Image 1 (tube, one colour):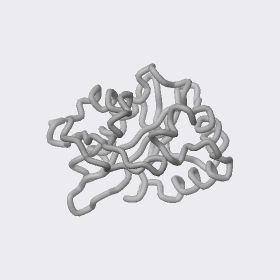
Image 2 (image 1 turned 180 degrees about the vertical axis):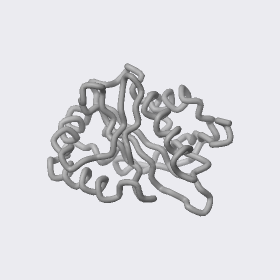
Image 3 (image 1 turned 30 degrees about the vertical axis):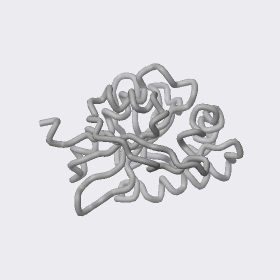
Length: 179
């Protein structure tokens, strides 16, 4: 997997030396991410970051992991995005994204999702990407809407976040929509 770029940001595969940058970004972001990303919790440790980065490096470019670091043009770690939950038969996957607190509100997630969408339809055989977001996570819903994802419906109690069931909404991006 190679890097994906626009003038403001770059997506690149995780590297073993990303542990400290990932850990710092996650720790900075616990307050805004923990309600939606259970892995980013108050006890998130450097060992958790080592495991996260190692797992993403190991699975890079496989149907278990197309994950990328989001960084600015100066190389500052801004967050991550990727594809998971691949369905090889029906050729779709889940698209997810997160940003560190200090990178919010600048259009970074929108640019990252567009890069990842284009990569997905140019470099894989996927025809559909799904973005599943907790109903209360309006910031992530706005990102999905800004990239042109279509709201398909409401999923009752679809997510288990902090040991509680939450309703979600599902958005889709289709290869056929970009032709």
